[in-house]
Every structure is written in structure tokens, then in C-alpha cells.
Image 1 (cartoon, rainbow, N blue to C red):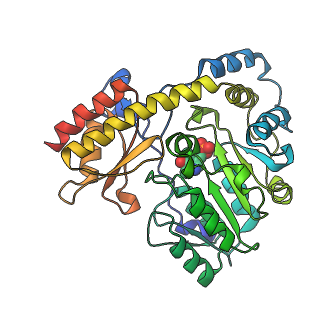
Image 2: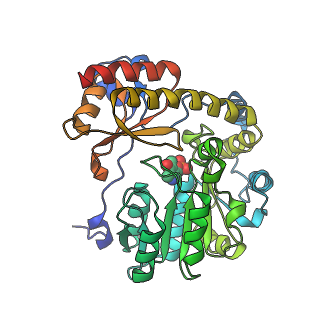
Length: 365
Ligand SMILES: *Cc1c(COP(=O)(O)O)cnc(C)c1O
């Protein structure tokens, strides 16, 4: 019998959104009739500009990518008004989270996060044997964070804004207020996976790397997986002061994103039209979800992301709703495992959303 690292005993495997293939297999629904609104992917698909960059680089798949990733760092540095040495690239911002965890944590450490937030923070912390502390609320409340921070002195504080899976955001003012209370020995991670959506909705909720670069113990995380529509390419980044980034580099395997991913990300940065269209479609469509909820007295959390969370009344079970929708070929996220009787729906295209509303109404009646 192999004796696995004892830290593993306490880890629950990350539950990813169900793939379209599973619904085809289990319920015999044709792939084109399945609507996947479960993983916060961009419903417009991959930008044609990015697709072209992938095609143009297909003949370089035998070459390792430029391991310095200089060109991508240069465009990101320009975009965010920082220097190349402030940036580390990961296979998704998930990989940067892993670098952070391994660089900072050990068995004597603890990490602090909100009551309901991105599941990977806990998993990476537990891999290192660290203890996971949570505040009472899913919102990032100053008082709750500072009280827990002062009592427990965690080595990492996670601020996920906008927050996944709830969709709410913390204002820039509040984020900075929390950061200013936290001493240099604690790393603050500001996870901005949905920041493009927050910025489009309300500037007061948009935190930029530039707002944070003055703090030596803060790292900002961004990703190409959400607004940029590149979840399948696996590219994300961390931005912080040079010393911090230098330490994270010690955890990075060489060539950690592919030649095609690198080319795709560089092209994506230049492709503002796609982001503008993404935001325009999203703003129009999310309104339909808000109106739908208001018209039926359903509770929802005001969203700063590309998804919306409906909090269901007690007599409507979120697991039942999710299972019935799945049988009809609509994949959404059941938040029961987060301790909420709620469902999270990624905002889709007009047609996808039509299908969701149609089937959701059938399930409700
Ligand atoms: C999607 C997501 C990420 C990371 O996604 P990657 O595809 O690994 O870049 C990080 N944080 C949050 C909150 C997310 O929702």
C-alpha cells in the first residue's frame, strides 16, 4: 500500500462544470442541443483574431515556446503600466495560485478567505498541509477579514473580487482598506478573474494591478479564460513587485504554457473589438436574467461577472433544479456543495439564454 502524503486525506477533488459530452452520453441529447452555462466560458467562443494566431503558429508546434515569454509580458506590461519583471505567466491563473501556495505555505500556516469563494484556494492550501480559515459572509467584509487576520495571522489572505461563485464584487476602496491593515508578512492575493466585467459595470469596483503594485505583499491575478474566451488555451498571470515575482519563478516549470497558447494570448491582447463585443452582448443578456428574477420574485445576487447566482427559496431544491435542467440538456452549476441553495448560470448568447429560461420555467412549474 502506498502511503500518500497525509495532507491529501483532507482534500476534495475540484468539481468542474459537466462537459457537453457527458450530457450526450447519459441523456442521448444531440451535442448541438446541449447548452453549457456552467463554467463561465465566453459564449461568443474564440475570437477570430486569436483563432488566426493559433493557425499561423501551428507549424511551430515542434518548437518549445520562448521561455522568457517576453513578448506577452511586454504587451501585458504596457496594458497595465508595469514592468516585465513584475509579471509571471501561468497555465491559467490557477497555476499562479499553485506557485503562490507552494512558495508561501507549510504545515504551520493558515490562509484566510471569504465563506464562499473560488474552490482552488482551499485545495492548494491543503496540498501544503495549511489550515483554511473563512469569514462568516460570502462578501468580503472589512471587519470580518481584519478581525480574523488579527486573531489568526494567516500567511495568505485571498480577496476574490468579483467573487466566484457568488458574482458580487468588493469596491476598490474596500479592497485597499483591507490591504492597508495587513502587515508585510502576509501575502494578499487579489483574484481579478472577472475584472473586465466589473470594470464595464462600475469603475468603483475595478481594481487594477496599478492600484496594487505599490504594496510589496500583494499580487494581482488575471486570466485569459473568461472575458478573453480562451479557457481551453490555459493562460493566466500574476502581477506584483519584483522580489515576490522572483520567488514565484522558483516554483515555475520551464515552458509552462504552450507555443500556441503564447501566440494566442499575445494576439488576444491586441484584440479590443472582441472584448467590447463580449461586454456589449453580456450587458444586454444579463439584464434578461435580472428581469426574469424580478418578475418572479426570485432572489439573485447583483453580478459583476459573466454569470448570475439565483438564490432559491427553501421549497425549491437547487440539486433538483440542476438535475432536471441537465436532463433537458442545460448544464448550470449547483451551489449546494458551497452551502447555498442556489444555482449559478453563466450568461450565454441570446439563443442559449432563451433555452435556459424555457426549461427553467418548465422545471419551476
Ligand atoms: C476561472 C477562475 C480562475 C482561473 O482560471 P484559469 O482558467 O486557471 O485562468 C481563477 N479565479 C477565479 C475566481 C476564477 O473564476
